[in-house]
Image (cartoon, rainbow, N blue to C red; front, side, top):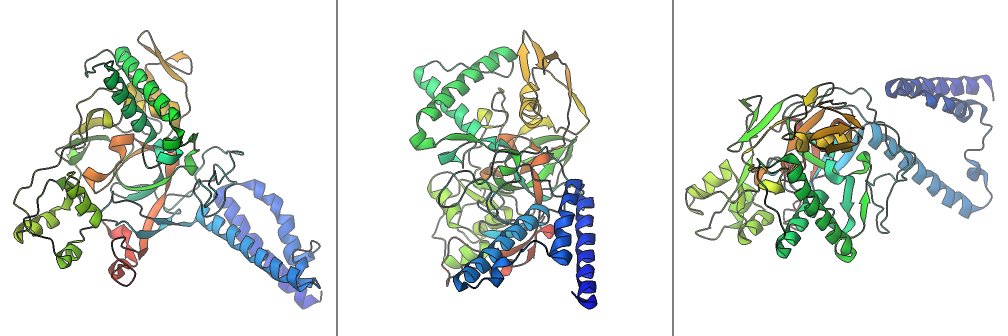
Amino acid sequence: MNISTRRKAYLKFGIAVVLYLLFLLWVKSWWGLLVLPLIYDVYVTKKIPWTWWKRSQNRTTRVIMSWVDAIVFALVAIYFLNQFFFQNFVIPSSSLEKTLLTGDYLLVSKLSYGPRIPQTPLTMPLTQNTLPVVGGKSYLEHPQWEYRRVKGLGKVEINDIVVFNYPSGDTVALKSQDQDFYGMVYGYGAALLAQQGTLGKLTPDMPYEQQQAEYARRYAAGRQYVESFPEQFGKIISHPADRRENYVKRCVGLPGQTLEIKNDTVYLDGRPNPQPENVQFRYEARFLMPLDEATKKELGITDEELGYLQAGAGMPMTGRVKKTLVERGFIAPDPPRSPLSGGDELYPHNMAKDWTTANYGPVWIPKRGASVELTPDNLPVYERCIRVYENNSLEVKNGHIYINGKASSTYTFRQDYYWMMGDNRDNSADSRFWGFVPEDHIVGKPLFVWLSLDPDYGLFNGKVRWNRLFKWVGKIK
């Protein structure tokens, strides 16, 4: 190696080392220093034959290994970018209609709230938890690292649209992953006990331990039913936090705030939080004349929404859509709201309550370092946070609460929690159904829509929503 070549090699090595050290400083992972000798060899000494195949006399070997080299490099680069910087995400459902649409492809920034150090680092790139085609888990259970998040550009703010891991997705039935496992089990259990004539009645003023005994019966009956039909529900498995399904909702409640929903309006610490511009509610509207294609496209009414109406479930509509349909004579004025979900359908599933999706709470949202006084009335609200998200044992004996074997009247939270809801309020499975989103489940913030495909239309008939391309999500309110 001549002097000029050596200087260039050291210059490239120096640049690579500076960038690499800055990355290690950012993520605070000094184990990475063990890689420095390898970087030195790549740029300077070249003792390891990294590209041995380029010198092979066998043309087939050179061709195959060039493809292997390119594929491995691409997978490593994608894994690195997805883990620490940006990730692609497609809107799978209508819970944020008409703010974000089914078929919107989002670029999600991990930098906005700070990327997480991977809890399950050994995973197949471009997969969340399941291998394509062959099925099975796309990650190795071990090693599993403790949650840690590196410094980002900011924190979750009120009304941010946020991508996060589905909190209730710790346990799933593989053939029914679109359903909340716990809500499904409690529901089947109640139905089975009612069929047997042994379903106990529950009221909010019933003693706590009596309530919990009844809910335990429902859960046991429902779980046994689901486990008895693997051909229908599939195998029951668990996922670590960062391998749970990705969801996207709007953050409507921050750590330390008291949230209450009254007549569809979210109140935070007693003050109303402004409704999103495109908030939707479901109405039992009847069309007085056929809806033409031009009006359907103009108002963004989807086949899915019309399907709800035909099924008798009511049609989701924004205020603008409802007003336009009334003014143009498609529906009668003042259509009634569709029936609301309530009672045991809502979180927490093991607490008797008369809440609905339109009138819910109040609930205090846990905050890191803050303590809550535990009582039989509020324990069901916080027990999942204490037991599942913060890994404590919790039991109630003779009216006393025991956490990790010690009698406790208060609990101090180790994480921040958030309350997430969809803008399609009557058609969104959100925190009202499965509770708080822990800080360690936060994935990132959508930046913009880079592609939008309408599932109701063909490729040459309006499939691409050109007006949504590069729409900045940060401006969506």
